[in-house]
Length: 195
Image (tube, rainbow, N blue to C red; front, side, top):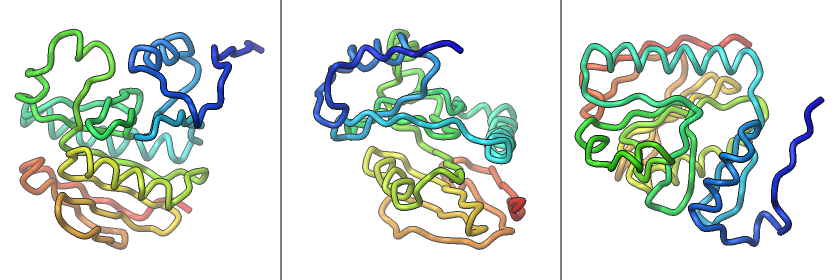
């Protein structure tokens, strides 16, 4: 068994890491997935199980196929950490950034944690995810400039749709989701999740 040593000698909820310090902690500990909320608290993200991992990649694949055809932006996996304008560092399960916004970043910004809010995010609730915390994360995305977000909740067999300036919409599964004006022409048919 390989041990993991985080170079932390402080309370994770009361430290003010610089962006570079946070980046170095993440780079020095690739075995662990970290996020940071807008208040600076480090969040250790547990790995997901087989069902969640399979569903996550299926949903992200549909987004990737649409993007390959449309060539309108860049798709990102759950391993990508975005430095959001609201102060948090977050890794959506899948994300998309419109191409002109991505190109406007410097090469260095694209190499590290991109300092940009995606235009679109997807989150898939795993069995270990607290629903209220995941809903707060979706709201954080909107507050940071994300224009459209889908949060899939297999436990309730539903999807929550988050849009700028609008109340959250909840749809029962199965349903068909539209990328609306954010992802023009993207339609995603979502069946019920396996229980």
